Image (cartoon, rainbow, N blue to C red; front, side, top):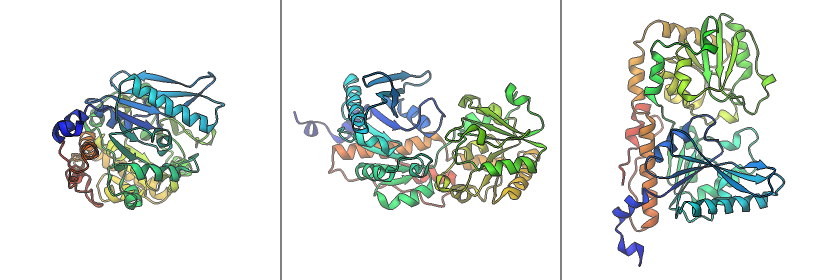
Length: 417
Protein backbone atom coordinates (compact mmCIF):
# COMPACT_ATOMS: atom_id res chain seq x y z
CA UNK A 1 0.00 0.00 0.00
CA UNK A 2 1.27 3.46 -0.86
CA UNK A 3 1.57 5.31 2.47
CA UNK A 4 1.46 8.77 0.95
CA UNK A 5 -1.82 8.07 -0.84
CA UNK A 6 -3.57 6.49 2.14
CA UNK A 7 -2.81 8.96 4.94
CA UNK A 8 -3.71 12.63 4.91
CA UNK A 9 -1.07 15.19 5.89
CA UNK A 10 -2.76 16.14 9.20
CA UNK A 11 -3.00 12.54 10.40
CA UNK A 12 0.60 11.92 9.41
CA UNK A 13 1.63 14.96 11.44
CA UNK A 14 0.00 13.45 14.51
CA UNK A 15 1.76 10.11 14.02
CA UNK A 16 5.09 11.82 13.37
CA UNK A 17 4.94 13.32 16.86
CA UNK A 18 5.60 9.79 18.09
CA UNK A 19 8.73 9.56 15.95
CA UNK A 20 11.82 9.08 18.15
CA UNK A 21 14.32 11.88 18.43
CA UNK A 22 18.05 11.23 18.60
CA UNK A 23 20.00 14.15 20.01
CA UNK A 24 23.73 14.16 19.25
CA UNK A 25 25.65 16.13 21.87
CA UNK A 26 29.22 16.94 22.83
CA UNK A 27 27.95 17.46 26.40
CA UNK A 28 27.16 14.66 28.83
CA UNK A 29 23.55 14.49 29.97
CA UNK A 30 24.59 14.53 33.64
CA UNK A 31 27.34 17.17 33.33
CA UNK A 32 25.79 20.64 33.69
CA UNK A 33 22.06 21.17 33.22
CA UNK A 34 21.65 23.63 30.38
CA UNK A 35 19.95 24.11 27.01
CA UNK A 36 20.04 20.49 25.74
CA UNK A 37 18.64 19.08 28.98
CA UNK A 38 15.88 21.69 29.23
CA UNK A 39 14.71 21.06 25.67
CA UNK A 40 15.16 17.30 25.44
CA UNK A 41 13.30 16.76 28.72
CA UNK A 42 10.33 18.54 27.19
CA UNK A 43 10.52 16.61 23.92
CA UNK A 44 10.62 13.39 25.95
CA UNK A 45 7.12 14.10 27.24
CA UNK A 46 5.70 13.20 23.83
CA UNK A 47 8.25 10.92 22.17
CA UNK A 48 11.22 8.68 22.85
CA UNK A 49 14.42 10.72 23.13
CA UNK A 50 17.92 9.24 22.95
CA UNK A 51 20.79 11.50 23.97
CA UNK A 52 23.73 10.20 21.90
CA UNK A 53 26.96 11.40 23.53
CA UNK A 54 30.57 11.49 22.36
CA UNK A 55 32.33 8.15 22.42
CA UNK A 56 34.34 7.02 25.42
CA UNK A 57 37.61 5.10 24.85
CA UNK A 58 37.68 1.57 26.26
CA UNK A 59 40.26 -1.20 26.72
CA UNK A 60 37.67 -3.73 25.53
CA UNK A 61 38.37 -5.26 22.12
CA UNK A 62 34.84 -4.60 20.80
CA UNK A 63 32.76 -1.45 20.31
CA UNK A 64 29.52 -1.37 22.28
CA UNK A 65 26.80 0.92 23.62
CA UNK A 66 25.99 1.88 27.20
CA UNK A 67 22.43 3.07 27.66
CA UNK A 68 21.82 5.03 30.85
CA UNK A 69 18.40 5.97 32.23
CA UNK A 70 18.32 8.88 34.68
CA UNK A 71 15.89 9.56 37.49
CA UNK A 72 13.30 12.24 36.72
CA UNK A 73 13.33 11.92 32.95
CA UNK A 74 12.54 9.36 30.26
CA UNK A 75 15.50 10.55 28.18
CA UNK A 76 18.01 7.74 27.68
CA UNK A 77 21.67 8.66 27.53
CA UNK A 78 23.57 6.65 24.90
CA UNK A 79 27.32 6.34 25.44
CA UNK A 80 29.34 4.56 22.75
CA UNK A 81 32.47 2.79 23.93
CA UNK A 82 35.20 2.42 21.28
CA UNK A 83 38.58 0.66 21.64
CA UNK A 84 41.11 3.40 22.16
CA UNK A 85 43.59 2.08 19.61
CA UNK A 86 41.17 2.09 16.67
CA UNK A 87 41.81 4.46 13.77
CA UNK A 88 39.44 7.36 13.08
CA UNK A 89 38.04 5.51 10.06
CA UNK A 90 37.37 2.37 12.10
CA UNK A 91 35.83 4.44 14.87
CA UNK A 92 33.48 6.25 12.47
CA UNK A 93 32.38 2.96 10.94
CA UNK A 94 31.75 1.48 14.38
CA UNK A 95 29.73 4.51 15.48
CA UNK A 96 27.55 4.25 12.38
CA UNK A 97 26.94 0.56 13.08
CA UNK A 98 26.16 1.23 16.74
CA UNK A 99 23.67 3.90 15.71
CA UNK A 100 21.99 1.38 13.38
CA UNK A 101 21.90 -1.13 16.23
CA UNK A 102 20.22 1.42 18.49
CA UNK A 103 17.50 2.11 15.92
CA UNK A 104 16.93 -1.59 15.32
CA UNK A 105 16.85 -2.35 19.04
CA UNK A 106 14.05 0.15 19.65
CA UNK A 107 12.27 -0.24 16.32
CA UNK A 108 12.95 3.41 15.60
CA UNK A 109 12.19 4.03 11.93
CA UNK A 110 12.93 7.43 10.36
CA UNK A 111 13.95 9.24 13.54
CA UNK A 112 14.37 12.98 13.91
CA UNK A 113 18.09 13.79 14.15
CA UNK A 114 18.96 16.77 16.35
CA UNK A 115 22.58 17.94 16.48
CA UNK A 116 24.42 20.06 19.02
CA UNK A 117 27.76 19.28 17.42
CA UNK A 118 28.64 18.84 13.74
CA UNK A 119 31.31 16.26 14.62
CA UNK A 120 28.69 13.50 14.89
CA UNK A 121 26.99 14.12 11.56
CA UNK A 122 29.62 12.13 9.67
CA UNK A 123 28.52 8.78 11.12
CA UNK A 124 24.80 9.64 11.17
CA UNK A 125 24.38 11.06 7.67
CA UNK A 126 23.31 7.69 6.22
CA UNK A 127 20.17 7.56 8.42
CA UNK A 128 16.83 8.02 6.66
CA UNK A 129 15.62 10.83 8.91
CA UNK A 130 12.20 12.44 9.23
CA UNK A 131 14.01 15.74 9.72
CA UNK A 132 17.48 17.03 10.55
CA UNK A 133 17.77 19.84 13.10
CA UNK A 134 20.95 21.72 13.95
CA UNK A 135 20.76 23.66 17.21
CA UNK A 136 23.96 25.70 17.07
CA UNK A 137 24.25 26.62 20.73
CA UNK A 138 27.81 27.99 20.47
CA UNK A 139 30.51 28.64 17.89
CA UNK A 140 32.32 25.43 18.80
CA UNK A 141 35.07 26.03 16.24
CA UNK A 142 36.33 28.89 18.44
CA UNK A 143 36.52 26.79 21.60
CA UNK A 144 39.76 25.49 23.04
CA UNK A 145 40.82 22.08 21.63
CA UNK A 146 38.16 22.18 18.86
CA UNK A 147 38.88 19.85 15.87
CA UNK A 148 40.64 21.76 13.12
CA UNK A 149 38.03 20.71 10.57
CA UNK A 150 35.02 21.76 12.67
CA UNK A 151 33.90 24.41 10.17
CA UNK A 152 33.97 21.90 7.30
CA UNK A 153 31.88 19.48 9.33
CA UNK A 154 29.43 22.23 10.18
CA UNK A 155 29.09 23.20 6.51
CA UNK A 156 28.23 19.59 5.65
CA UNK A 157 25.59 19.45 8.38
CA UNK A 158 24.03 22.78 7.46
CA UNK A 159 23.81 21.70 3.82
CA UNK A 160 21.46 18.87 4.84
CA UNK A 161 19.69 20.38 7.86
CA UNK A 162 15.99 21.20 7.48
CA UNK A 163 16.06 23.80 10.27
CA UNK A 164 18.91 25.61 12.02
CA UNK A 165 18.62 27.30 15.41
CA UNK A 166 21.24 29.50 17.04
CA UNK A 167 21.88 30.15 20.72
CA UNK A 168 21.76 33.93 20.31
CA UNK A 169 21.58 36.86 17.92
CA UNK A 170 25.29 37.36 17.34
CA UNK A 171 25.55 33.76 16.25
CA UNK A 172 22.45 34.17 14.09
CA UNK A 173 23.93 37.21 12.35
CA UNK A 174 27.17 35.32 11.67
CA UNK A 175 25.35 32.33 10.12
CA UNK A 176 22.11 33.73 8.72
CA UNK A 177 23.39 33.60 5.14
CA UNK A 178 24.43 29.95 5.43
CA UNK A 179 20.88 28.56 5.60
CA UNK A 180 17.45 29.60 4.36
CA UNK A 181 15.56 28.34 7.44
CA UNK A 182 17.57 29.65 10.38
CA UNK A 183 16.18 31.19 13.58
CA UNK A 184 17.80 32.76 16.68
CA UNK A 185 16.75 31.26 20.01
CA UNK A 186 18.48 32.77 23.03
CA UNK A 187 18.23 30.33 25.89
CA UNK A 188 15.21 30.44 28.17
CA UNK A 189 14.92 30.49 31.92
CA UNK A 190 13.05 28.45 34.51
CA UNK A 191 11.64 31.49 36.28
CA UNK A 192 9.86 29.66 39.11
CA UNK A 193 12.99 27.67 39.96
CA UNK A 194 15.22 30.72 40.30
CA UNK A 195 12.54 32.92 41.86
CA UNK A 196 12.95 30.79 44.97
CA UNK A 197 16.31 32.50 45.57
CA UNK A 198 14.41 35.69 46.42
CA UNK A 199 13.01 34.14 49.57
CA UNK A 200 14.90 33.92 52.84
CA UNK A 201 16.74 30.63 52.57
CA UNK A 202 19.43 28.91 54.56
CA UNK A 203 22.64 28.85 52.57
CA UNK A 204 24.38 25.50 52.09
CA UNK A 205 27.03 24.83 54.72
CA UNK A 206 30.03 25.22 52.40
CA UNK A 207 28.91 28.74 51.46
CA UNK A 208 27.44 29.76 54.81
CA UNK A 209 30.90 29.60 56.36
CA UNK A 210 32.27 32.19 53.92
CA UNK A 211 32.46 35.59 55.63
CA UNK A 212 31.28 38.99 54.45
CA UNK A 213 29.14 40.04 51.50
CA UNK A 214 29.23 37.50 48.70
CA UNK A 215 29.15 38.00 44.95
CA UNK A 216 29.13 34.91 42.79
CA UNK A 217 29.29 33.05 39.51
CA UNK A 218 28.01 29.61 38.62
CA UNK A 219 28.72 27.72 35.42
CA UNK A 220 31.60 25.99 33.72
CA UNK A 221 34.95 27.50 34.67
CA UNK A 222 36.99 27.40 31.48
CA UNK A 223 38.87 29.53 28.96
CA UNK A 224 35.87 31.84 28.59
CA UNK A 225 36.47 33.40 32.01
CA UNK A 226 38.86 36.33 32.41
CA UNK A 227 41.15 35.00 35.13
CA UNK A 228 43.21 38.19 35.29
CA UNK A 229 40.03 40.21 35.83
CA UNK A 230 38.96 37.92 38.67
CA UNK A 231 42.34 38.26 40.35
CA UNK A 232 42.22 42.06 40.01
CA UNK A 233 38.68 42.21 41.44
CA UNK A 234 39.67 40.19 44.50
CA UNK A 235 42.51 42.63 45.18
CA UNK A 236 40.38 45.71 44.52
CA UNK A 237 37.55 44.60 46.82
CA UNK A 238 39.10 42.60 49.68
CA UNK A 239 35.94 43.09 51.76
CA UNK A 240 33.91 41.06 49.26
CA UNK A 241 33.93 37.28 48.97
CA UNK A 242 33.98 35.99 45.39
CA UNK A 243 32.22 32.62 45.08
CA UNK A 244 32.67 30.38 42.03
CA UNK A 245 30.47 27.32 41.53
CA UNK A 246 31.02 24.84 38.73
CA UNK A 247 33.45 22.35 37.21
CA UNK A 248 36.89 23.43 36.02
CA UNK A 249 37.34 22.40 32.38
CA UNK A 250 40.19 22.82 29.89
CA UNK A 251 42.28 24.91 32.28
CA UNK A 252 44.63 23.65 34.98
CA UNK A 253 43.41 24.17 38.55
CA UNK A 254 46.78 25.69 39.43
CA UNK A 255 46.14 28.45 36.86
CA UNK A 256 43.05 29.67 38.70
CA UNK A 257 43.47 32.94 40.61
CA UNK A 258 43.90 32.37 44.33
CA UNK A 259 43.21 34.73 47.23
CA UNK A 260 41.71 34.59 50.70
CA UNK A 261 38.48 36.06 49.35
CA UNK A 262 38.16 33.78 46.29
CA UNK A 263 36.24 30.56 46.96
CA UNK A 264 35.78 27.63 44.54
CA UNK A 265 32.97 25.39 45.72
CA UNK A 266 32.96 22.88 42.86
CA UNK A 267 30.04 21.62 40.79
CA UNK A 268 26.58 21.71 42.34
CA UNK A 269 23.23 20.22 41.39
CA UNK A 270 20.97 22.48 39.34
CA UNK A 271 18.26 21.98 41.95
CA UNK A 272 20.50 23.57 44.60
CA UNK A 273 21.64 26.64 42.68
CA UNK A 274 18.94 29.00 44.06
CA UNK A 275 20.00 28.21 47.63
CA UNK A 276 23.53 29.35 46.78
CA UNK A 277 22.42 32.44 44.86
CA UNK A 278 20.17 33.40 47.78
CA UNK A 279 23.32 34.22 49.75
CA UNK A 280 24.78 36.53 47.08
CA UNK A 281 24.43 40.30 46.94
CA UNK A 282 25.18 40.33 43.21
CA UNK A 283 25.93 37.89 40.40
CA UNK A 284 28.97 38.00 38.14
CA UNK A 285 29.73 37.24 34.51
CA UNK A 286 33.47 37.98 34.26
CA UNK A 287 33.89 36.67 30.73
CA UNK A 288 37.01 37.27 28.71
CA UNK A 289 36.48 39.06 25.42
CA UNK A 290 38.02 36.60 22.99
CA UNK A 291 37.05 34.31 20.12
CA UNK A 292 35.43 31.76 22.44
CA UNK A 293 33.01 34.38 23.80
CA UNK A 294 32.42 36.33 20.59
CA UNK A 295 29.00 34.79 19.97
CA UNK A 296 27.85 33.61 23.39
CA UNK A 297 24.45 34.53 24.81
CA UNK A 298 24.80 33.48 28.47
CA UNK A 299 21.85 31.54 29.88
CA UNK A 300 22.79 32.73 33.33
CA UNK A 301 21.84 36.36 32.57
CA UNK A 302 18.06 35.77 32.86
CA UNK A 303 18.61 33.13 35.55
CA UNK A 304 20.46 35.58 37.80
CA UNK A 305 17.77 38.20 37.23
CA UNK A 306 14.99 35.72 37.95
CA UNK A 307 16.81 34.99 41.20
CA UNK A 308 16.56 38.68 42.07
CA UNK A 309 20.27 39.40 41.81
CA UNK A 310 21.77 42.34 39.89
CA UNK A 311 24.24 41.20 37.26
CA UNK A 312 27.72 42.59 36.57
CA UNK A 313 29.15 41.53 33.20
CA UNK A 314 31.93 42.30 30.81
CA UNK A 315 30.85 43.68 27.44
CA UNK A 316 29.54 40.48 25.83
CA UNK A 317 27.76 41.56 22.64
CA UNK A 318 24.44 39.82 23.28
CA UNK A 319 24.39 40.96 26.91
CA UNK A 320 24.89 44.59 25.86
CA UNK A 321 22.30 44.26 23.10
CA UNK A 322 19.49 42.73 25.13
CA UNK A 323 20.22 43.79 28.69
CA UNK A 324 22.48 46.84 28.51
CA UNK A 325 19.66 49.32 29.16
CA UNK A 326 17.97 47.29 31.90
CA UNK A 327 18.17 48.48 35.48
CA UNK A 328 19.82 45.59 37.26
CA UNK A 329 22.44 44.77 34.61
CA UNK A 330 25.82 46.53 34.82
CA UNK A 331 28.33 46.26 31.97
CA UNK A 332 31.96 47.10 32.69
CA UNK A 333 34.87 47.60 30.30
CA UNK A 334 37.82 46.92 32.63
CA UNK A 335 38.74 45.83 36.15
CA UNK A 336 38.26 49.24 37.89
CA UNK A 337 34.89 49.69 36.18
CA UNK A 338 33.90 46.13 37.07
CA UNK A 339 34.76 46.68 40.74
CA UNK A 340 32.74 49.92 40.79
CA UNK A 341 29.83 48.12 39.08
CA UNK A 342 29.92 45.50 41.84
CA UNK A 343 29.46 48.29 44.37
CA UNK A 344 26.52 49.70 42.42
CA UNK A 345 24.92 46.29 41.99
CA UNK A 346 25.17 45.56 45.71
CA UNK A 347 23.66 48.97 46.50
CA UNK A 348 20.74 48.23 44.15
CA UNK A 349 20.10 44.87 45.81
CA UNK A 350 20.29 46.35 49.32
CA UNK A 351 18.10 49.31 48.32
CA UNK A 352 14.91 47.30 47.85
CA UNK A 353 12.94 45.30 45.32
CA UNK A 354 11.26 47.96 43.17
CA UNK A 355 13.66 47.31 40.29
CA UNK A 356 12.47 43.70 40.03
CA UNK A 357 9.01 44.64 38.68
CA UNK A 358 10.41 45.52 35.25
CA UNK A 359 12.66 42.46 35.35
CA UNK A 360 9.70 40.15 35.88
CA UNK A 361 7.81 41.69 32.95
CA UNK A 362 10.84 41.14 30.73
CA UNK A 363 11.24 37.52 31.82
CA UNK A 364 7.64 36.61 30.91
CA UNK A 365 8.68 35.97 27.30
CA UNK A 366 11.81 33.99 28.11
CA UNK A 367 10.55 30.67 29.48
CA UNK A 368 11.93 27.33 28.34
CA UNK A 369 8.35 26.24 27.62
CA UNK A 370 7.91 29.02 25.06
CA UNK A 371 11.31 28.30 23.54
CA UNK A 372 10.45 24.61 23.29
CA UNK A 373 7.03 25.22 21.71
CA UNK A 374 8.48 27.56 19.08
CA UNK A 375 11.24 25.11 18.19
CA UNK A 376 8.78 22.22 18.16
CA UNK A 377 6.52 24.08 15.74
CA UNK A 378 9.39 24.57 13.29
CA UNK A 379 10.51 20.96 13.70
CA UNK A 380 6.98 19.60 13.13
CA UNK A 381 6.70 21.71 10.01
CA UNK A 382 9.98 20.27 8.67
CA UNK A 383 8.81 16.70 9.33
CA UNK A 384 5.53 17.29 7.52
CA UNK A 385 7.20 19.12 4.64
CA UNK A 386 9.65 16.24 4.14
CA UNK A 387 6.80 13.72 4.11
CA UNK A 388 4.70 15.86 1.76
CA UNK A 389 7.05 18.10 -0.28
CA UNK A 390 4.11 19.65 -2.19
CA UNK A 391 2.70 21.24 0.99
CA UNK A 392 3.63 24.96 1.05
CA UNK A 393 5.89 25.95 3.90
CA UNK A 394 4.24 27.89 6.72
CA UNK A 395 5.11 31.55 6.83
CA UNK A 396 7.18 31.97 9.99
CA UNK A 397 8.06 35.32 11.48
CA UNK A 398 11.81 35.31 12.20
CA UNK A 399 13.04 36.83 15.38
CA UNK A 400 14.37 40.27 14.71
CA UNK A 401 17.49 41.66 16.29
CA UNK A 402 16.56 44.33 18.77
CA UNK A 403 13.35 42.77 20.05
CA UNK A 404 13.06 42.85 23.80
CA UNK A 405 13.35 39.46 25.52
CA UNK A 406 9.68 39.74 26.54
CA UNK A 407 8.67 39.90 22.88
CA UNK A 408 10.76 36.96 21.69
CA UNK A 409 8.17 34.24 22.22
CA UNK A 410 5.44 36.19 20.42
CA UNK A 411 7.70 37.07 17.49
CA UNK A 412 8.37 33.43 16.69
CA UNK A 413 5.19 31.77 17.90
CA UNK A 414 4.41 28.79 15.64
CA UNK A 415 1.19 26.84 16.27
CA UNK A 416 1.54 23.09 16.62
CA UNK A 417 0.58 21.24 13.46
